[in-house]
Amino acid sequence: MKTLFIACGALAKETKQLMDKYGWEVDLKALPALHHATPHRITEDLDRMLAEIRADYERVIVVYGYCGAAGIDDVLKKHQAVRISGPHCYEMYAGAVQFSQMMDEEPGTFFLTDWLLRAYDKAVLAGLGLDKHPELAPLYFGNYRRLVYLSQTPEEKLLAKGQAIADSMGWTFEHRPVGYGALETRLAALMQGQEQPA
Image (cartoon, rainbow, N blue to C red; front, side, top):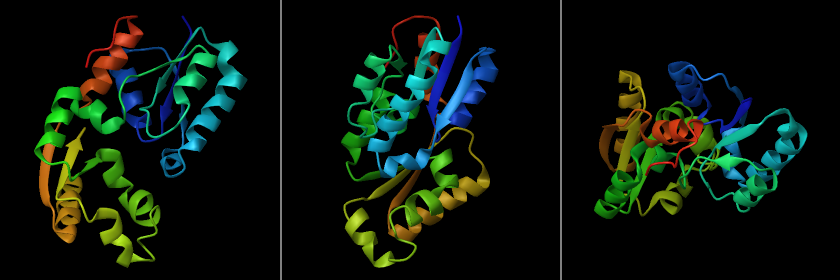
């Protein structure tokens, strides 16, 4: 069965690593991760891409959370594609139960992944305009109390950067090495035609 993965740019590297791990013979395309700043572009670009290439594949699996992209599931239904379950990558990596527990412990939690730590300056600081207007930080982040780094393949420099971000914001820092988490188990289930686990 000829299969295509369409992944969020923030999940493309990990999706490729899972393809290699399992030996999945799947094509992979990605949409820009920075579309999260304008979520309607996720839906629009996904619709456009599927319209152009859907007929070339027997199965299309979209590696995206809901991510505020209104209408994403309608687009998938229109093109007979399926999506990995989950509202966003933080829940995918942590798993539904653990993510819910973390939010119950501290609703004011800011999450980072390997990708977001590497892209922090561009995706967060520049993306929110904080590189030019740092005085806006309290407006964006005033209700946060904790930073949780959900690592896939942690490196010392990423841990240090996560700690430095937390320190600069006055937050507590937690590192949770979750690996691929539910991203892996849900994607594997989809590839086997099974129901996705939580």
